[in-house]
Length: 197
Image (cartoon, one colour):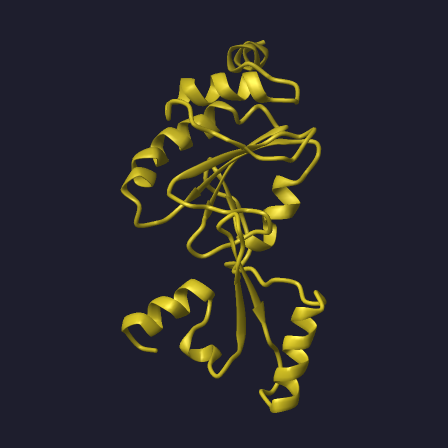
């Protein structure tokens, strides 16, 4: 598994050299997502049969990759990982804009300073979260990323994601959030005026 197809396949399904030997069931869905089911415990004839029968009966939950939850949030943009995705994104009191990125993606690197500026501009809007997640190291249920960056908006009132396809500028994002947002909006100018008093 050190190189070639074995390493790439291992990365894709979330298996490292340290995980082997292991058993996974990979289920590509019609919408392009890939669900992964992990067998735990010793690999025996009986455990393999039980694992497959549980899968076929719908008793298993898919496994999702996740980095550790950050101990602190020191960046303007909120850093999501698989384990924190539902708690943050599905919070019904917040509108959440999420960039799914890959660290090696040139378009993502170009977007980073714009996205940081957006998060800084909206810092007084505690009910709007500007977040990002490394989609090569993290997965979340119901999220199917086909390219990088993928930007999705999760309104507070209905967590059905809306794909962002507007201008990748601060003004473009602000316009979109004002049009699609479902929570109260605090204008930056108004908040600066209050601070000056």
